[in-house]
Image 1 (cartoon, one colour):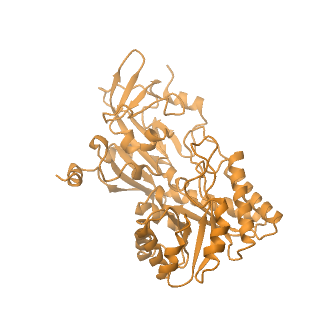
Image 2 (cartoon, rainbow, N blue to C red):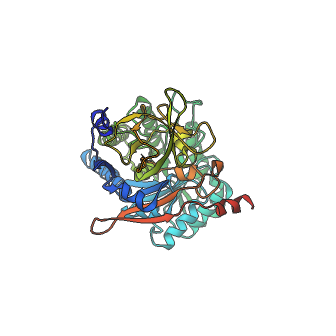
Image 3 (cartoon, rainbow, N blue to C red):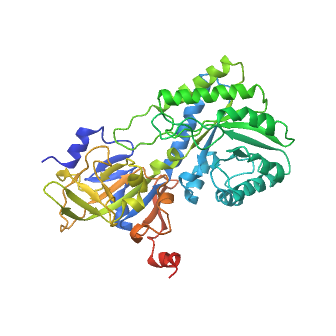
Length: 464
């Protein structure tokens, strides 16, 4: 039988930028993963911090190059969606790159305060406040504005929101309006529940914002769930949004910025292909063309990239504890963790991740199913969840060397969706979390962010 490495090299272009194999062991961004496992054990979550800065710089370069190519007269601003990962080490790494912040709930604002105290942001940093806002969220936004955070922009999500700021913000302030985009045709409903419907936007401006002595409309916000894709649906929705900007700009001279949301995809397969440069150039060219057709100045552009910022920095490593042949065809490799608790998107959204063994690349391969530790029948990962059949090296569970596997580009949303630090299904503990960085000499350094969750922490939450 062929070796596992032969299968990969014949199926994909391999090695790739992030992945290579030396001495039958996998490297992730030049990090020797077996060394990490030998030091920290499994299950293990890791974050490779330099990837965050790398992706931010790449996106900024793409937009700035396209702006220059098309003589676009607006500016570009990169915002990070904190909801993708709220961890301090993520925000601090991202903020090294002169970026700004998008928030989605009240507890984001104390994070903003902490970052300001640590001098990671300034009062001039753009803070785009999205979401349908409960009273505490609106209160915190008002307090930021009153404390001199001049570029804090509440994005109005309903027709009654402005009243709170009018009553509680002391000086002048900017606001945005989120437009309720139409959903993809195959979606269960037609229009997003978030934002203001197209027919109400001009009325909201004329009746509430324009008469205000304090509020000025600065920004129009747009977001669709499919993300930025080269589809007729995306370009249609983007064009409709830009035409609305042009229409409103003629009434509102203060309006000078659009937020086209986020949605750059990340690599979830070794087959991944996406022409980022082409997409960015098309966005810039389309916006300029529509604005020219309507004789209005082009807007400044904000983007909000969350998964693109942090997704490719993450990985989850497991060891194969045992294998079980449940019938003539179905062989199960049992991991020392859980997909439901550690990678909830793989379970809840059928999310695809890059899955590779860490060692034993010189062993023959066979088709397997991967099983998690919970008692839930849905705690699995196989060909239905993966882009194709799952093949892994053959491994003797009684042998001297365990088989280790890794899921890659898992850095966005998994900790928050999995209830990090809280109660997990079947009380499966949160794994260790290791941060990986490079020092000034370019040498790999690791730091244990958190140990595996202990039973005492869960017992306290449960009231024992």
